Every structure is written in structure tokens, then in C-alpha cells.
Image: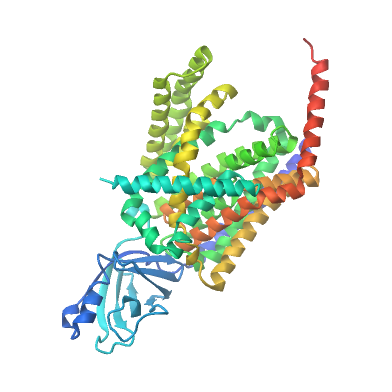
Length: 161
Length: 429
């Protein structure tokens, strides 16, 4: 291959794509990704006020020792109760986080973690990301919606753990 | 203290399953490493954790994974040293312009396509803790990597090392690997500075400059002493080998402390090693077996434990996965093929080169684990990229057989030998 041909091929096959890359990096700056909610969350609520002891125990066990959220964009995977590893899915819509009960959840017994529903607003003002919202158990009117607050202990990144 | 019984059971199971699956894959004309990668995925939540969750939690309890990870990381640190050691800049000089152009295009084409894909995936699979620049650069780097060791293994298995295509592919893959790791180092710095970690940016950059100077002007001379000793005695003493391992570890820790990653240091230690063929072979023989047979399967298992194909839920997620695979193949295979053709190779040769460069193998898994560790990719994207690494590596051998069948390779090898023989006849004594 002659030197001249090499320079032309190099400019066309390497130079142009490099310019394109710069354009992509500049063009992508305005893109907004969903809020970061992945990581471990310390959850607090007044469970003692609940009338039914069964659901009190169940709800207390949710954050043992904390609630983990794995995030992929707006898709969330929650791990409740470290020893039982109950896994539920949810979504993030703007600043609202939702966790849905699992398909085969045993509703009506008030003791199945998989029947838990959660909806919360994500607080971004403070240095530490926070949640405030309600927990409910599907098919269990005895356990009225329980207000809760949570703060993020650590995001998903290794260096922050 | 780790539960030693659990750890030993884990090591036994991982090595046993890896060997078994590797043998099965070899029967399908696939490289062993492909089987080992697949075995790792099988042991994770994608298969074992799904089919037999109790067995999975007995074998791999969450509390034990730290120790398994530590062992596997030691393996990859040594393996990256071996990858760096096997790289030889002379292989590039032999092919001149063709190799330079092809290798650079084979990096830039998938890189740009990967970054373009980031425009679509960033709002869908990332979050605001990651900058778009970091995300796009990572996607580019992950798309443009080539599995140098897997490629070398495939070439060797098919008897292609002596062919023009084989040596060109080795040269291009070597350039790709060095460039890919330099880009990844830059990305780690960008991402970590975005997260404002404990290591300030000036410490990373200043320290890295000082480290490179020390490695190239100080440590390289020390390593040259190993080669001299080897040439004198035909072997290295145990003390010398121990010192070499210490150099690898110190280099790895230095880059980690500078805010990069362990693997950059060990890779660099390999790159600056003397490149005398016999010396390189000797070191590979000493360190390769234990690393490849014992430690690397642990790394594959650890990767498998972090990968859950079940995270890729629903049609939209599988569409993203398909798109990633399509972009990865078009960028790497297509880019390398067009560049090789533009540099004067035949369509068949260019296609063969593109196919070989498209194999990502273990190197892709290493990059993806770095990405997940620093938080630049999400668990779902990580799993999709692992699937892409498996698909692109798996397709290499059958596609190569179709483009460049074995009988053609044999004919070309014979012609090359005849040419060499004719040249030797006219060589002055």
C-alpha cells in the first residue's frame, strides 16, 4: 500500500470516526438518565402502632439489616430481608419509586413478604439520597398503609462501600 | 476467618464443572476457555441459582463470595501479566501499514458504534450517578476489545500461526489490547473523578506519570536482569521467580492505590518484560498452568455469580441485548474486515481477520467486571454484555471454518513453507 493511499484510508477510516465520536460525546451531554437509587437503604417506620402482630413481624423483617436495590435504568430489583432474600421488582418513574408484589404472592395472610407493595418519593435535596412513602400488603386491610422513611447507606459503587 | 471447608468445596466444584464443560465444548470444536466461561455462567443465578436455589446458596453463600473473589482476582492479576508478557511489538513491525491501519480501525469502528449505542442506552439502562461521557467511553471500550489469548489459542488449534492471516491477526490483537487497556485506564480516571472518590485526580495523573517512568526506566532494567540470568543458566532460580511475582503484585497494588485498577499494573509489568521467545515460553510454562487450570475458572465462576440472565426480563430488555450483540459484531467484525480489505487483503482474508478480531472472550469479562466494580454499568447491562461476549466468542470458530476452511489453511501453510525453503536456498551462508 502506497503512503498516499495509506494517508487517505487513515483519514477516512480513522479520522472521520474520531470526529464522529467527538460529536457523540458532545451530543450526549444533554441526555438525562433516571435518578440513582441503587444500593443499600436503611428503612425506618413506626411498626409498633400496627394492630395485627403478624404483619408487624413481617414488616419489621423487611429491612433486616437493610433493603438492597439493584438498578438498571428505570428497572429496579429489591432484595428484602437478607436471610430470606425475598426478591421483588419495581420501577422508577421520575422521582417516584414503586415496588410491586410478586405474581404468586400469598395475599390475604398478611405474612407473605412477596405481597408487599411500596411507593415512595425520592428525595434529592440532601447530600444523602432519601425515600419517603408508604408500604402496603396486598389483600391485608388489617395492615393499613405504613408510612416509612429511608436513607441510602451506600450506592452500588465499589469505591463508596 | 473464611469457612475453609466451603472455600475448598467451591474450588473443587468450580474446577470440576469447568473441566467437564470445557471438554464438551472442545468436542464442538470450541476453545476450552469458551467452555470454562460457560461453566461459570452455569454455576451462577442464571442456571444453578434458578434450577436449584438451595444447592446454589449452600455452595455459594453470600458471606463466602469475598474469599472466592479475592482468590479469583489474584488469578486474573497473574493472567493479565501473562497476556502482557505474550505481547510482542515485533509482530506489528512485520506487517507494517496493513497491521497499523487494520488494528486502529478495528478499535475505532466498534468504539464509535458502541458510543453511538450509548446515546440510546444511557437514558434506559444507566442512572444519574454515571456521566454520559464515562458511560459512552466504557461502551466503546467494551465493544472494541479483542481476546488476544483466545485468538492465539484458536490460531494455534487450527494451525494458523504460520499463515499471513494468523500473524496479522496476532499483531492487530496485540495493538487492540494495549490500546483498549489505555482507553479503559482513562475511563476509570474519568468515572472515579466524577464520583469524587478518595483519590484526587491530580494524585492519579501525577502518580501514574511517575509510575510509568519508574516502570519503563527502572523496573524494566531489573526485569532485563531476569533474561540475562535465564540465558546464562537456562532457567531461573526460585528466588528470581518469587521476585518476579512480587514485582507483578507491587505493580498491581500501585495502580490500584493510584485510583486505577489492579489489572493495569500487572498488565504493564507483563508488557515491559523482556521478549526473548525462549524466556517468554519459560515464564509462561512456570506460571500459566496453575493460573489457567485453578485460578481462572474461579474468576469465571465469580463472573457467573454476578451474571443473571434472568435480569434481562421482557421483550424490550432482550431487544437491547440483541442490539448490543448486533452493534458489537458489526463494529468489530465489519470494521476489521473493511480496514483489512482497504489495506490490500483479499475478501476471504479480510473476513477471516474480522471474525478472529470479533472474539472477545475473557478480556471482555475482565473489562465488564471493572465496569461493574466502578459502577459505570448496571447489573442488567453487565449481564447483556456478558451474553454478547459469549455469543461473539462462540461464533468465531464455526464462522472461521466457513470463511477460511482448514483445507485452505493447510494449502497456504504449505505454500508459505515452500517460499521459506526457496528463500533459504538463496540465503548467503
